[in-house]
View 1 (cartoon, protein in one colour):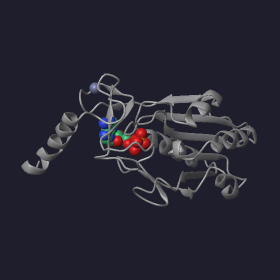
View 2: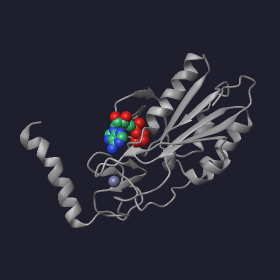
View 3: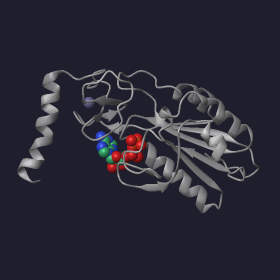
View 4: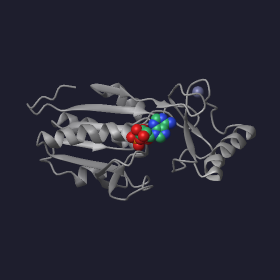
Length: 207
Ligand code: ADP
Ligand code: ZN
């Protein structure tokens, strides 16, 4: 998207499954804003402290300093109103208030870049991303690579037993799957055995 410097705000959404490059793309855009000497603030929900409490970390280990929030409302408390670009990673964990807050920020002239999962482990739209998609000026859908067949993957396959909407983790707990290979919820037992066996092979051979 072309950057306008007349203080008009807008909302950009980057969404897709796990491993699809959402964090990488968010960091890339925020770094470009910093190069353009714009004031940037980055937030992520406390729930996602898998790799680092005060950084966004991509699966490819690209990092950027961020501030931890308990809920979306904290963004307003933490915001330096001179900030021009507001980034939010793992927005699907930020709660429903994020929709109103993103709108408020954009209306007050900020560029808001939101990254998050668009669907959950059952393949259902993951709030509040669907509402943000409807309200955004710009939408980018990122795809991963299906670990079963190599096709473009839009799903996050859960590999552990849980009915809970949120099970925080990545490698070993989830993998990217295409539409054809995705099994909503838990994969069948033989599927789990296959995944475990595949993971064991490199360890045994030392590859
Ligand atoms: P997201 O934020 O969408 O979870 P990240 O930006 O953290 O994604 O990580 C993307 C990186 O993950 C890729 O550049 C690649 O190095 C790595 N990766 C691991 N598994 C996959 C996969 N199945 N498909 C694509 N990239 C993968
Ligand atoms: Zn597939």
